[in-house]
Image (cartoon, rainbow, N blue to C red; front, side):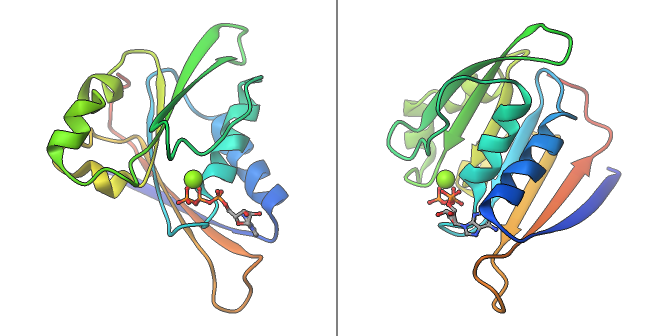
Length: 157
Ligand SMILES: Nc1ncnc2c1ncn2[C@@H]1O[C@H](COP(=O)(O)OP(=O)(O)OP(=O)(O)O)[C@@H](O)[C@H]1O
Ligand SMILES: [Mg+2]
């Protein structure tokens, strides 16, 4: 599978959102995005930026308690688009993933699926179109290294 990697350095929360927005502008209906990074890395800030690209009016919050947030937006052609924003932090087993309907959710057609703590999805994690890795450099806690890996040969589901 061919991959392309791009790395950005963010200097602020605002810049992370801006990178998220620019990334969001490339997304298509059905794409799956896996987000990796420690607590407070900036995953939700990045998702806020993605949602800005789709003019989502709802406030983007961490779905840590609700597990799945649903947002309604508009793509660059003016067509409606639905975004599922999942946070798997609290889920640790296949049974818990089944309880929230994880498999059905991540295979929903035409919906953009964005998954925080994607590593907790384990074997149920679908093939992803992009994975985003956010790390906090030791040298500056207000900076973030954002690496985006695009998987080239996946069809959109
Ligand atoms: N350059 C930066 N980019 C993003 N966030 C930053 C940056 N510098 C500082 N921050 C702060 O880091 C925090 C990131 O929080 P955020 O909720 O996005 O993290 P998260 O990765 O989603 O965490 P969790 O795993 O708990 O969901 C915010 O408080 C934000 O203000
Ligand atoms: Mg979060």
